[in-house]
Image 1 (tube, rainbow, N blue to C red):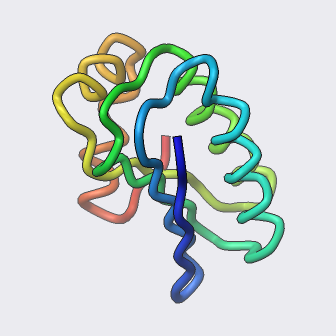
Image 2 (image 1 turned 60 degrees about the horizontal axis):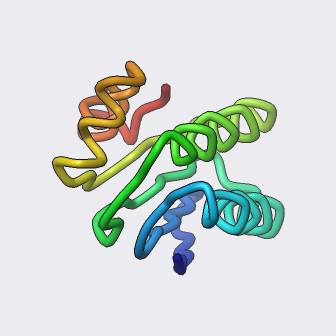
Length: 108
């Protein structure tokens, strides 16, 4: 798994690329933590447009990202999840993040 980071107008967008599974979750969380520390954003968007697979380890990354952003007074949103990732989010009760992000770059 790889990631790219973009920061603009207080919004940090982290694009996760490849598979977000147990083996990649630690690297993904490190990428989020480093980017948040560097940019101190008010909003973190996890862009899943290039994520081909996610298991329950990805849920941990999402929840840890949200906790980190809430400590800073911000929030986390997800954008562009494919059908497989969306199914994992639905099972975990996190699918609403997709709808919220369309409205206001939403929060969990």
